[in-house]
Image (cartoon, rainbow, N blue to C red; front, side, top):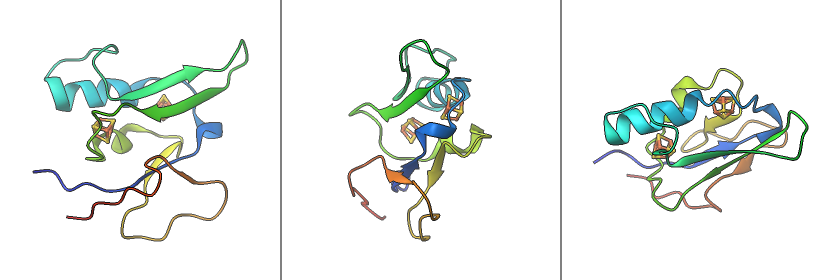
Amino acid sequence: MARRQTIGVRSENCTGCQLCKLACSFIKTSSFSLSHSYIQITRLGTAEQYEVSFTPECDRCGFCVNYCGFDAIARSGPSPAPAGRLQSATGGLDLGD
Ligand code: SF4
Ligand code: SF4
C-alpha cells in the first residue's frame, strides 16, 4: 500500500499544464486520461489562474507531485512545509504510514 502523506498546494503557481492529471491517471488506471484523474485543475474565470484540488478518491500517494515543475503541488508530509502560502490540500489529513 502506498504511503499516504499530506500534499501541499500553491494554486497561484499552477500553470494549468495538466501533467499532474496525466500522471495520476497513469498510476491509478494505467492509461493517460484527463477525465480519470484524482487531481482537479480548475481555471478561474478567463484569467490564467487555476485552482488545484483533489477528489475524494485521492489517496495522497504523492505520485503527481513528481511531475509538477512549478511547485504548485508538493509533499509536505514529515518535512516542514515551505514558508509562504502553502496550503494543506487535505485539511490536515496526514495519515503517516
Ligand atoms: S496524490 Fe492523489 S492526485 Fe496525486 S497521483 Fe496520488 S491519487 Fe493521484
Ligand atoms: S499542479 Fe503543476 S503539474 Fe498540475 S496543472 Fe498545475 S502546474 Fe501543471
